[in-house]
Image (cartoon, rainbow, N blue to C red; front, side, top):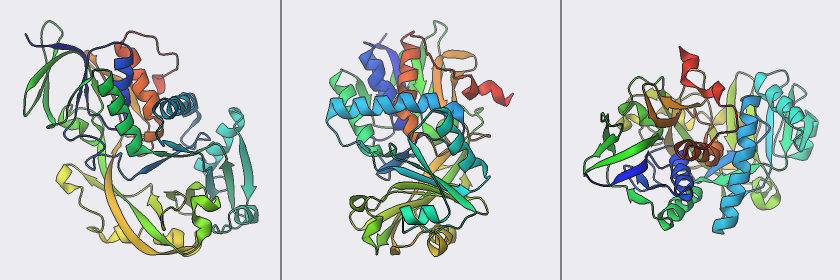
Length: 375
């Protein structure tokens, strides 16, 4: 019998790269597997940056996870010396009474977060490139900002390698099988591996290995626009943002850098079933149209499209995360269904998976994220 790993991490992008590192820190024999060496453009982690905010419109159940993730990101940056977190602030804007902005305000109050509440003209005065009337309110969170997603993943993988983690980024895992003695047999196009436990974090294409999971894959795009007003730049203090406009369109963006500002639309997209369907930016007419309502009325200072990119969301039925073990196979731990808002949690989710494999107690309530809520 060949080497038996304590844990094999299948999919080492956002959550998987963190899980492999933290499992190695627990002294476990770890194998990391991916179809390409991350960071790469085949998943959901590319595009340079991801927002991290703590006043959370998706619900207060996420706050304890977020606050733990915040500490882990800070630790990673300190230990590695890498440029991972930028505290540029995040301004959340939405119609008064809308669920998202009211949840942001509620979580800020409940967890006593360092925020500033603004309405109508106050938003415009604080951020002159934004334009909202008295039907809108905002929550500005000074301590929030953005993460360099690709730098974070590369850092986790490099540190894991230093801890002795074996890494095979030659091809996608094609099958997972289970032996009577409890070991898991993992096969890719190159070889077969054995592991006592598996961490399954393959993102959008998890159903290739577990077809029964309730996951839908969406093709999503984001784009960089040229800057015509330097007040949109990080150097001039422009924050990251989430903006919901009347009609339920939700946008996100980052302060400008190197002459461009990155903006995306959170909702919408195309449901796809195969990786080949995640076509390049511009292959759908709406790719170049979806940001126009934001730029036409609510955000000024850009000077036309520079370039765009495509990614995928793995979406659960309620757009909340799935953090669980595989039914019938408790040796397989999984995180999926991050639904386009998961990267900021990746440090903590990876740590949770590593702790579970190491037999350590998880001190936060993860029941809201279990698979059985869909039964």
